[in-house]
Length: 251
Image 1 (spheres, helix red, strand yellow):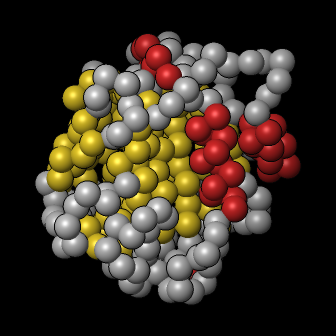
Image 2 (image 1 turned 135 degrees about the vertical axis):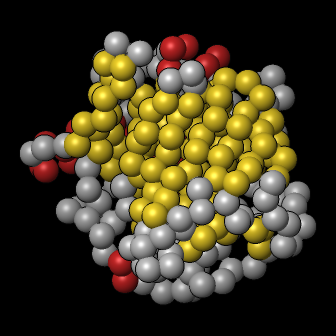
Image 3 (image 1 turned 180 degrees about the vertical axis):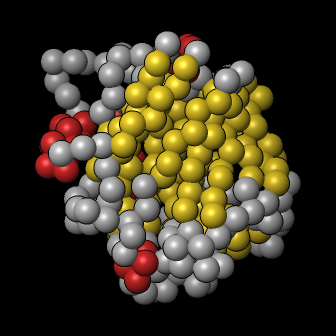
């Protein structure tokens, strides 16, 4: 079975929030990035927040790891919990050089509470769940201000790699906030781990917060007659761009 993923470049329409609409039996993708251009944390990030809200609206309850239970300077490996998830889903975060910080620095900051995970780009890490999940979302701060890139590899017996679209406006990426969320539509697309694959650019550093998951039972059935506002916007955005990158998965 071939599955297509669609994404649009944020650099082409920097002021617009994007969400990728996908065919049946595929992943739904929600993403947007709020530019900043400063190391001062953004007081609000409406584009990213809107996409997170759209992501959450497709789920019936979620679990979120906000890193608030970790002491300052805690280092990987970390045992993650997701309060609110069904079935008491937990995960192990391994690899990379991640460190928990409880105060902003260098354009990276918490999107809720005070704690966040900081990782040098180019040091890949993996989140391995104790059971299959169907939805995964997160906030990233300060991504790409030195040209670093990010992709996610979903592992479920086979693998699917999706690129996380980061604006090419490096100066605007300083202190920016990005949300990325992905939802599987059926059991064949659930996954047991997510690998964060990045390139370092010119010694880029990424911040992450609010890892959010849901299992297949929490995915709302799609309503084809009433598209989500974010989905409608995503389709309009893709139409304006004229072409989109395709990701194919074969099972």
